Length: 155
Ligand SMILES: [Zn+2]
Image 1 (cartoon, rainbow, N blue to C red):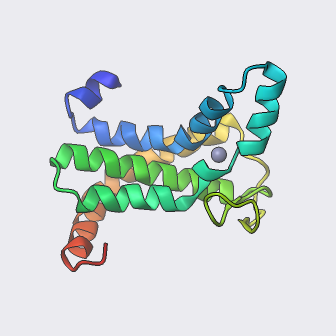
Image 2: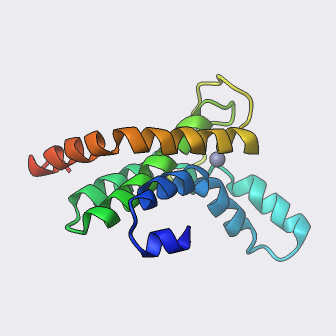
């Protein structure tokens, strides 16, 4: 995967979309890993899980930013894929009872549709596959559409 990213191969965008789909939870785990004791770590994880990393704004900004930036098409599709994946993760978590934050650093007001139980690892793997497939088929259209929006100065 790292090799594919380094070589800027076309699958890089798909792998990035995959990585983006699990990244919010990986970030939460990393952040709580900073707590020293394992008991503290669990507590910290519970406190920060679906916090700032699960705010949709970052991922939309990443997607839009990648579109607006003057970078190579490979890098663009990779960063946009990452934002696309992260956004779909937040959308899935939005369907769980706990929901996702409405504002990045506030506990008050959460978005939740309460449609499915809490996301398990299997669900995220499933999501990652769907996101990668969607990105594979829709990437051209998404990039073209976003490129057009960027041209009209909407981002
Ligand atoms: Zn999550």
